[in-house]
Amino acid sequence: MTDGPSACHNLAARRHARALTRLYDRHLAPAGLSISQFSILAVTARGEAMTIAELAHAMVMERTTLMRAVSRLEAEGLIDRHQPEGMRSIVLTLTAAGRDRLTAAAPLWRAAQEAYETQVGTQEAARLRDDLQRYAFED
Image (tube, rainbow, N blue to C red; front, side):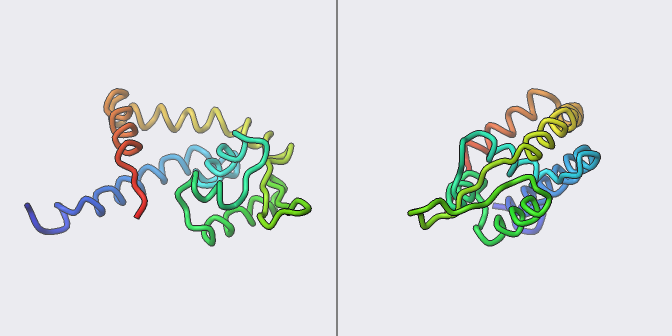
């Protein structure tokens, strides 16, 4: 086993994640979204309604961090947060404006995907994505 920062799996993954985030954020900027916001909208759009807990699990995010991001999206009118009668959980749905913003941002997201694939190679990008998804774990 090698020691030092260059051998740290976490540091390597975080460096890669930060660089990848910057690439996606640059591409999504014209839509007024960060990649985190885009991802929240995209995951929320998959279903009729999601609880905060379901979205946090799907995003692998702490609920408090997610709530800060959701609050910003709600302030922009992109997400609606409500508590259905008889439920203890808060439910999130995408608003019409949220769907419109997601639709407008989709080509920008695809351009970010293509830019990443150009940088690392299409097959390597797919392999990295698949490996990251396969080895994802919760502590």
